[in-house]
Image (cartoon, rainbow over all chains, first blue to last red; front, side, top):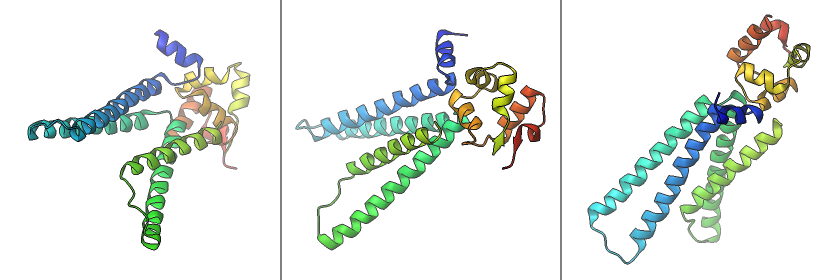
Amino acid sequence: MGKFEEDCERKGLVAVDIRNAIIVNFWLLAWAVSLGVISYFLESDWSFPTWIQWMGFIIHLIIGVGAILAFKRFVSKADELERKIQLEALALSVGVTIIFFSSYAILQKALEIADLSPAYLIVVMSLGYVMGLIVGRLRFR
Amino acid sequence: MKNKLKVLRAEHNWTQADLANRLKVARQTINALEKGKFDPSLPLAFKAARLFKMTIEEIFEDS
């Protein structure tokens, strides 16, 4: 047994879950960096040929697909309690996002307030997901 | 769902981490199972039954 497995065992964690979670974090970090860097350069004053802009789009898309597959692998291989917590957090995240955006759409029509930036979609989904994880961890503690 | 995991674990002098390692789950899962907060999947129930050489019904009972 390697040191990593021993550390996981001592902490009461499943080594394969930790390994898969690290891989998911790597993909998500790469996705966030690619989003930031590509958006920054496309919005800058530099003019890029169309093929480079397409390359940026394709690279970001490929990293996004990689992140989805890594997360799917993490959830499907996860310890069954962890899988339940993750799925409930995802359900909460989707629900909160739909309710938030539909409510905002009604408010927007009623009060004529500003359009909501798509960036808020990621923020609301992330907050819903993190909230779901915290609630799940506390519930099954 | 009620279960006898805590009693069986104590009889074997195992910690939650020991049982978790034998069943290949996280220690938190054993803790949640013992407290009755979480119901195991059928494969995990079979694994526990094999480990303690008992039937599933002898370990888990519908409450």
